[in-house]
Amino acid sequence: MVTMFVRHKVEDYGNWKRFYDGFGPEREEMGVTGASVYCDAHDTNAITVMHQFKDLNAATAFANSVELKATMAKAGVSGPPEIWFTQQIETTPN
View: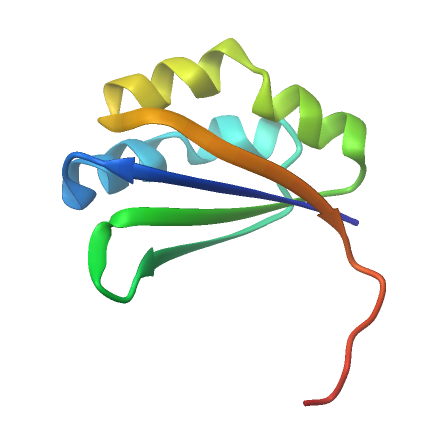
């Protein structure tokens, strides 16, 4: 499993969330198997999104998709997002 993290600022979380939720079918179609959304504890417009994929090829294709970039622009993402990919190597009980 590969996890993609995206961190970016948004102009308005409520507006961004409407676009994020509306993009759900496209996310699934492009290989997202799980997702979580986080905000900075001091700034609700500083968002980190986690998306899971079966492999790095699917994650990279999603990150580079024209559809994702267009939706992010319409959703009010401010500036370029920071994107990174990880592979889980261990799970601990605590």
